[in-house]
Structure formats: structure tokens, C-alpha cells
Image (cartoon, rainbow, N blue to C red; front, top):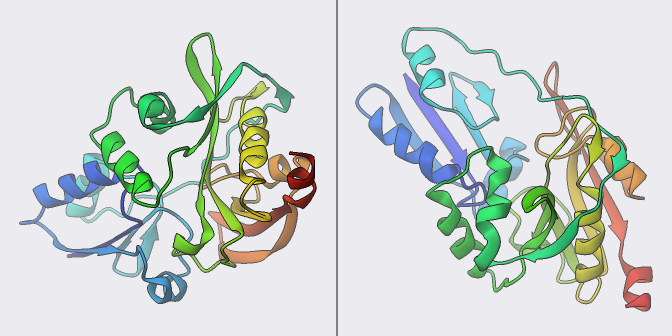
Length: 253
């Protein structure tokens, strides 16, 4: 059985762990690894807008996987992947909003739902390799990360999006809570920061789910414009390219 794993370098801290796990199963699957970093044509041909994608027999899986997933494939099961669409709170909760840097990425890395990951250091090095020192902003409440927003320059993004020297791309916003909106404070702080060097910012959002980002209502409430549908996987996701002008913010800063 052949497994093709497509991934955007160390964009997700879990990538290192998933690649290591695949290597453990190397004798059981025909495993092919594909880093899409810089391969814009490959990402475009795959219509790939997630940091990872696994393909088995033409079937695509977008979420991070573990041993349970691989063991199911080994016995011939075809795991069902359901969109992550939890209840979403809209009441904003603001704590202490601070830049994400090398020194505090261990807090931001909590977005993956694990307290520690070998991939944290790899992601920091990956972002610093782009020349970044500030990776985004986190909203800290009671000493813990409650929400966050991260970015990269659009010119390094392999997804099929508009790119330009004055265009930024939001890679992820997190976390979603059933009562509170912890993400908007971090997003606003990020926009203020980006306005010094960028004229506009893009993001990929699902209509209803929150992975890779979303839902759309969250971005619409933060004055993002819906440009178009870029990918539709019936029963799983409908992804939109959304954008916001930072020009007015640049004038105010």
C-alpha cells in the first residue's frame, strides 16, 4: 500500500512527529514524502491549502494523524475524516497580548493540544530562516495561551494564493472556544504589526470549520473580504480566500 505525505516543511510543529512515525511504518507501507516548500506548481496541481495532506489510493486526509490512523489503514479500514466544527463563542476575551518569538514559542505551540513537541524548535528555526523574529501574537490569560495568530510573507507560501512583497499571509489562528473569542485580540495586534511593512493580508478559511482556519464568520466580523472559493471537498470543507487591506492601519501607525 502506498502512502504519499505532502507537507509544508515545519509549518506545523507536528510534522516532525508524523514523519518520524511514518518511518516506523516504512516496512509496512510504500511511503513517499513530499515537501511542498517552494514547489508552487505541485501545491497548485494538488489544490493543497493545508500544512499537511496524506493520500492513500487517491483518498485525501488533511488532519494530523497518529498510530491509530496508520493501523486502521494496515487492516484495510478507510478512516472517515470529519471536519472540526465545534461550537464557536463570539464574546471577545482580552488578556495580555504579546509577540510570539523564539523565547515564548513553547506557549504558542500549545495550539497543537500537546504541552511539548520536538517540532517546536524546528518550527522556530523554519520561521527564523525566513528572516522573521516576530512570528505573530498570542493572547495570554491566567498565564496560559488562550488564543493566537501567526503569519509569513506571502512570497514564501506554496499555496496557490496572490503573492507580493507587500502582501502577508496568515498561516493560523487559534484556539476556538465554545463561549469566548480569544483569537480576535491576537489578530488585531498582528494586523497592526504587519501594517508597518505590508499593504494587505490574505488567509484561507473554511466556511464552517476551524481547520485550517475559520470559521468564515470570524474573519468577516474582523472586516475580511471574501474573494472566492479556492477548494471544495464535499462533506468536509469549502475553503475561501479572504483578504483585508492594511493601508488605513499603516496611515494610523
